[in-house]
Image (cartoon, rainbow, N blue to C red; front, side, top):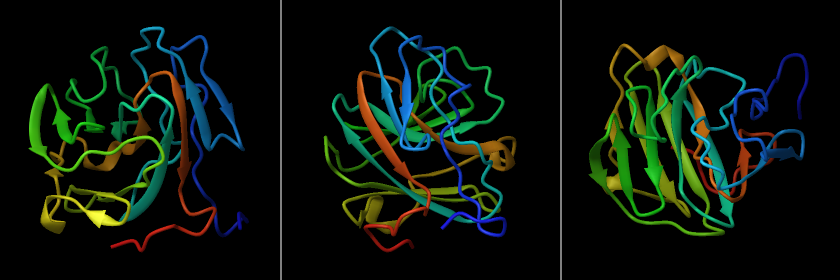
Amino acid sequence: QDSPTQNYATLNPLFTKSVSANFSDANLKYQGSSDGAIKFPISTIVIESPAYWESVPTGDVVGVGLATYDTADTAPFGEGPSTFSFLYNGLIRTNGTTLATVGTYTTGDIVGQAYDPATGEWSVSVNGVWQNGGNPVGTVSEDYRQKLTPALAPNAGHKTINYGQQPFLFTPP
């Protein structure tokens, strides 16, 4: 439960270029469009300590991941240097490079992510199964470690994110 001593992040409706992006459920649910949006919804809180969160895509599925709070990337999600994406087809991408290929996900799957800003290690799970043999799928460079926030790829369809406001469906690492 949200309180002065227990605050949770939400998606930031001010950080999107999509003219038809809709936020609901206290900014925990995002519905995008396929209008060619480049910016993507990000969280309102920068990750300062090890964190875990879950998202559920419903509708078009593209990607989830991390982005810097001050990103100036004009490239698609995962193609610029300050975004890190886990795409529906299992590709882990940043700066236009595939870091790993892991399991895929689709509508209704629970996608978990864990990130530790001290080490830069980022891990992903699908329906409670940690990908890449349970090892991190990528290590973020020191330039970006202290600036990252959860992000969602812009596209048509809904995505719901849980930062801990509700019980997690799977056990965090």
